[in-house]
Length: 324
Image (cartoon, rainbow, N blue to C red):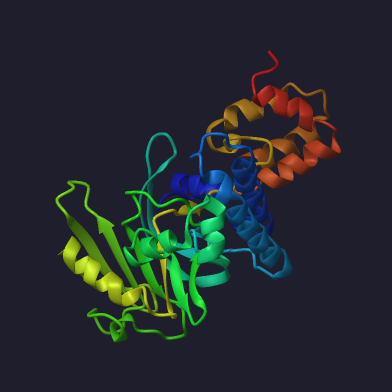
């Protein structure tokens, strides 16, 4: 991979604990203030925000190393059943002309931090949507609600579960115990830790079925019909050691610059240098700022230096087009 690829990757990659927290703060802010969501989001979105807050606290309490490998980064994976922090090492990465990732090859290492979602009783879920508990149990048994688990006291539903719809068929069954094997519950390949079924876009009733082992290695990939998937699900959902995660997934793998919707250092380096040149500062100070702006990992230092010089607001206004 060439020097330009390295520079773009370093501009995007989440390398440090601070960058993880900044990315989480940005995502949480969007969740709180985003008005474009389904009408039932008012019921499950607070649970999602609470889960992310618990994850952020776990990050703050953990000593996390700065990833010095040039093509390594952290990524935050958010599902409706957990939030995980992975570390990734890329062996190949291709950017398009807009600086967006076009294709990659990488190795993902086991989660450094994982926070699970809370589960509520079927009765609590029924009260949330003002429906009968019998209806909720029926939805679970008909697999309209899959993010549920059977306890001795009855069914429990993941707290982030929204109102069931027709788009809830795809997702993954995960063995939540140590060194699990889903093949003990259903006719799956031996050693399956995660079973994923994705509905094909051509809507012919077929599903892409994939089995992964404990190290996230693909061990079986085939297409199955909805009847076979239904039979597998009937067996899996009844185990207390198996939980379903649907395709509500967000992967945060790009660092953010607080106060900017898009990272200005990715696409506007020349504009940043122009801003520095027009400042009434000593030449050596401007040279220092330009060095930071051009560094692969100098964004945080650049912003911190502007704060000390009381130039942060001026820079923000300039980059947002509020000054000539």
